[in-house]
Length: 252
Image (tube, rainbow, N blue to C red):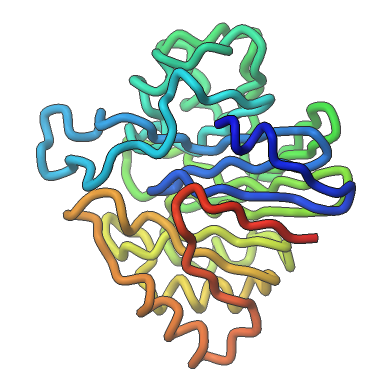
């Protein structure tokens, strides 16, 4: 986490670090935002097929963010063990859709630190603006699943799709031309597979697109090179980047 805190950026730059699965940390204009940090092995509790393939890249006790966004209430997105160890629950602003916000309270986050942000709603915190983006739930237990468009005051923007079905309604409601798009490619539990994720990126038209949700659990694995191939062979103009965990991606 010290690497993130100490990362120097110009006024026009933003930086992103991948935590694995669908978790990221973003930084710009002296604001640090985390989304869906999964820094434990809690998804394997009672379900050994979801055991992690590698250790968390950050100790949950060391994570520190001005804002934490949770897209839906699955353990690899709203991780109760990560939240239990998080040291800054009384000062961080949490953002989540409505049912997930209730789950955050149950996980020990003070209610006054939670802002409920559903699809098409916008919340401003400091110099950051977070807008909910429609997502089609991948299960009856997560009917409030929401993607998020993050925009910093310098104009840098990120669209995190959340887990979502690939569907015309999602495509129609998706943000247009963000700098960065983050999309699942595992093709299981109603998430898009590599080809669908590439077509999703074609519609959104980001500058950069990064795959996620393919590396943390063997049962959930997919080859990101397949996604990159579809991006390169479907006329998609975005630059497809296969990320390294905790490797800074800096753009302006």
